[in-house]
Amino acid sequence: MKYRRIGIVGAGLIGKAIYDEVLRCQAEVAYVLASRAGSSPKRIPEGLDPGLCTSDLEEALARPVDIVFEAAHADVLATIAPRVLASSDLCGFSCSALARPDVERGITESCRANGTRFILPHGAILGLDGLVDGRDCIEDVTITTTKSAAGLGLQEGADGVVFEGTAREACRKFPRNVNVHAAIAIAGIGFDRTKSVVVVKPGTDEMQHRVQVSGQGFAWYFSVASRSLGGVTGAYTPRSAAGSVRRILASEGIVNG
Image (cartoon, rainbow, N blue to C red; front, side, top):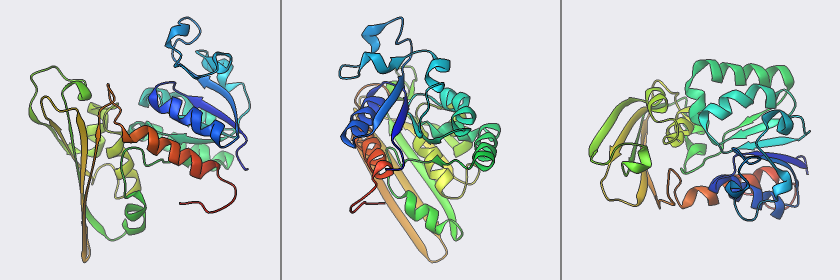
């Protein structure tokens, strides 16, 4: 196994799914960086080893690891990425951070300088492989996300289209809610050419992402929906995260890429 010691940043639903999958893959968890874990033990999700949890960034990053899985927040990813990539690979789920040119540049330069990799997980969406393969001949990408007002961090009463613009602008406006838009943009034609639409549907407990792609002689359309687990996470996302971990850590046998 290439990756034996694993760091995890974030101890929410996705962080817990990553933790469980790392153990299933028989790798070692070096740390779980959890917000205020030291001062508020009750915040540590059930099933996480409290001895591995810390709220001290310096303490966590001082522990040697082969790869870090980040599942916290775009601001956290922006802060830790250059330091993590100085000595290990990094898989970042809060990829809306890369909508900031300085963050994307810092990640790229750190990877180049240190021979490390930033791995883009597919998160709550499908089809990134097709976007990567076809990016040179794709002409248009539009992604429409529909959630409740609460799921977008908006006041109750919001309804209908609340944003239309580029994926870069969407990531700045909704950094916790449109990581899917960032993943689509990075895999495909970029933050400034990818079109983003965000829609509020009152009373829904479902999160939906609809992607339309067209290019030189082809067109795709696909939609992914999952029930909200509360906050910004849908039911599919933790399972998707676990699948990404499994593929990254797998060292033998038949592995879906």
